[in-house]
Length: 471
Image 1 (spheres, rainbow, N blue to C red):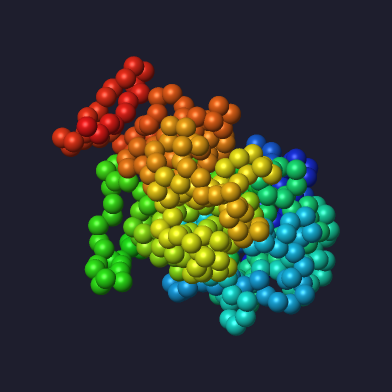
Image 2: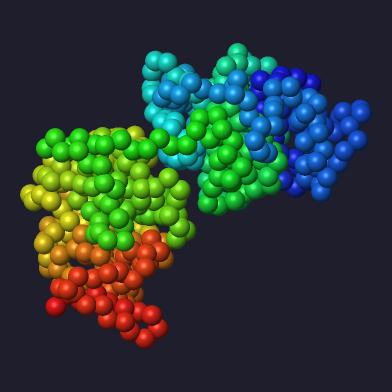
């Protein structure tokens, strides 16, 4: 049995019917049952967590209980400099899991890192060469660290803590059935987020639903528990406040727009979450709730995009498109693929696109670009606008001629924003739903009924539905 206090392993606890995550190498499900003097229960039984707590204190000397339940040590953390993620170019690292494309694996790992960067000052950047602090490897069996993998099942992954002999290394077992977003295999997003917690310096949490819990249980969407957040912020602190941004006109922007009293430059559903853009800021909404730490600078997620974007959308492959003026940018997660490029490359000989929308069902989804009462249908795969366009906005019955933004929700409804209002468009009836427009701030940000100036009047209708109409 290998005993190494500098490494944590991830292994299924099959006897308990769930996966055991990240236990110290002393401490795998197999080794627990083999301890001759171990009096406690199998992992996953009602007494498991109490027994695990006692074993941590007796067997894992680097773990300390400080200010809460998550195990963390100030002596094992990264310096507060940029942390780079490197999927190195050796053959083991390039051997991605066969079930997932390389592009999808990269996006999953970026999303797992975002879980931690959203609540800390850390910024993660993928590099293809040179020095990297975190090395990610999908490999098999014996692979050079005396901690061999064992094929499907068994050990899933292991990670090494900061300031140790293999600081920052994360190894995933290539032979596992890696999936994302479902419970049919092993969810790579959850495992990666857990292992990233270890390489950042976190040990385990005693909270059942924490990402750093020693027991894997499929959960979607992935969220930090309060205990996870307290642990990582103990090591690195909370996100640093946005500094003033100097624009091209040398004006300094210091005022964060109030979402209750503003329109928005762009809105897009990205990775299942809703992002509202205004000026240099972005608001992030997940499951109807504004996430902690927002608004934040948009460049926190997409380095290189300009302030005051005109439109944004996510295409079928998961790439994010941003438009401003006569240019566009494309990102794979947080990695820029291209941009700025001219809209003329897409067959669009206009500038200042007002809104972009990916709309339709599955294979029938199309991309629509809107400006000044007209719209174009665009094919990202063919990189061109369809020849029968532009067409009039009158095709979208009940939608204003000039809009600020548009997005499709998870149920297939299109939403069109103009000013402080939005319209919800039925994909079956192909018309605006009754009761719209409604107030953006009230429905998405929990704002109170707005105070309208003299040029506008608030009409309250039955059932709490209301409109704002200009006189």
